Length: 227
Image 1: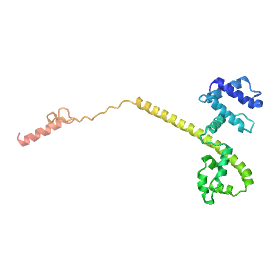
Image 2: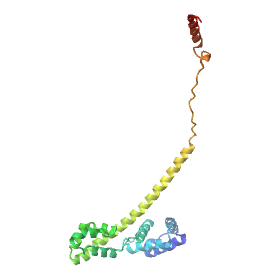
Image 3: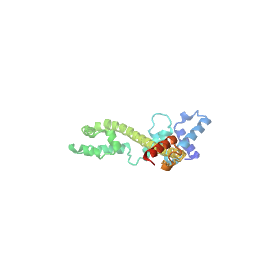
Image 4: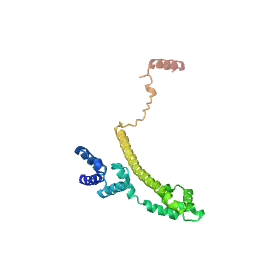
């Protein structure tokens, strides 16, 4: 996303939250554009705008979004197995209309996020025992709240999983480079074979520490032997 794209996106955000941005000065606005442009450099303007619209449509806080919140909504909007709240509730509605001994199998057919919102096969069975009015009002309201929380948590986990994976990969590469650099900096080791010197017996006494004593003992031995 370019600087110009970022300005268009922030103009949309400003229009949605006019009071918040009424007193933002030029310097603060330029800093905001720089941060958003840097954060979403690898995103298309259409993707970021989809995240912004998703945040605004669900927001009840009255505060504009941060870049991290927009990324969270981008993950929600782009989740391939995601369902809207109404679609998810229709899946639950079908799941409770099964024979009494098939609730485990019925629960297993639900998407993961719907399972998290429902809780367990036992919870699904409890929903089936409600009267229709309670099921379509209280139970539906509770489910939609839990489902929205599960979607947000799942999107956040995906975001941090990717970030952690990328960080681990980068750290691994950096450690490998450092190890290679340390290895290259070490002096080359020469393979040295110990030299074993042998002394010729004819040379005994020429360089020995006790050469004179050795010669005297040999001379005495020769005399005794009559040599």
